[in-house]
Image 1: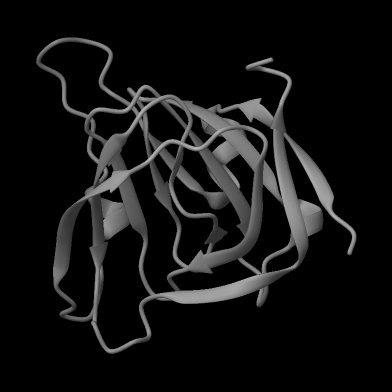
Image 2 (image 1 turned 120 degrees about the vertical axis):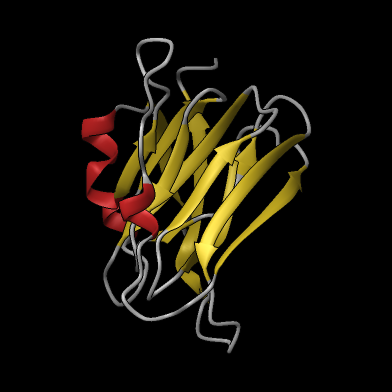
Length: 161
């Protein structure tokens, strides 16, 4: 079986824009950065929030599946996270391995995946971590879609050595 390799890159708002948005703290004390529009939903679908715990992974990481949420954006807000890995595959019918990107994200920055964007599960690299996750959920089985990758994807880092 063949395996594709992807190198981690530092995250920037511009690089991540095709997949969603970065949740960045405001520049000045007293300012607020709003991200509510990402979680807006025309239908009366409840907004749910949960905390999750993620055990650390060692690099290289091998991925064999991706997930997406067809009708809703999903926000990950780090609670006590050092650094984490975000892997995205675009918003096609299936995960797009050729267009996959892997980003190293500092624990002071959150991410919002746009509706329909294929992505890997949360992956932390240093120590056990917690995220606050916000998403509109119907809870009818249509909110979470998982798909195997056409071939395993090995994520490695030139950044972390």
